[in-house]
Length: 343
Image 1: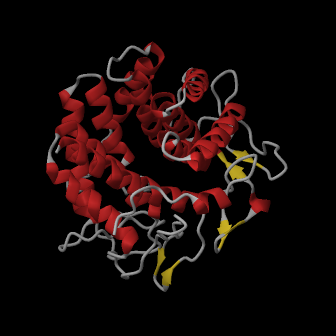
Image 2: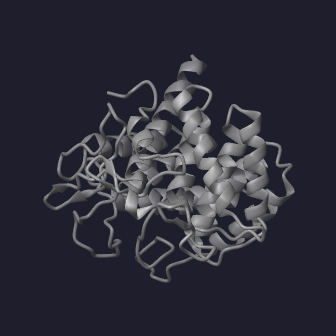
């Protein structure tokens, strides 16, 4: 059963006037542990495209954008962690949160229905885009934001420069192992962001080689993550390498969410229906089509559970897991709406 829209009740419960709480105990936010840009940026990426359909999404997007405006420094570095009292508890830097901030800002700048949000997000994106991270996943996330900012016309110079730099860093990666076709020695986390960034960059830069490399890697990842019945068995928190036993736990919702987003990107880029089966398999993983047959999404509140353990699901419903589930549902709804319009 696919909901007709995004249920945002749990996301609202995890958010206060300042931002999105990172952790939950059961379905209650753990306020004392504060907020992080990683999750707020994910939240903006999910809610900004929905702000013309939902008052709740609009209010959440406003809150998350304010948080990111505060997080990005004048030289493009980004704070990640804020305490419950509103103080930044870390030094601004260029970790994965920098890339996620650019991703969320790029989506808000192009997909929000409100001009004010688009203008504000563009200004913060351009500030963060002055910097460059040395880290692979941070660059992948940033590239996905740069693709949004560049737009179909490819007219945003700062976004295109960032996108070219990211593509140059991502494309040559190789693991060095002849029998392991993934570009790292082990799968880590949010793995599908790597092929998605290559596909998106290839389309934006009109480089078929990047698209081909990205779709090839996405196919490799799907083959590693899928059982013979097509059901997903995603990378656990400790990663996955050649010869690791299957299934492995704790399986993380971020893996299924990232895979769904990459498959949607591949489908939209190539118009090849073969990418829809793993996209729906990712949604199925949240619905209970996983190694334990346990649902990891509450369709009423929109909460996502924090993982699949050997003993069952982790009953906590934190921000990352909830947003991974909602992003996956968003991908499914995008296909449904597109196909409905084409009939």
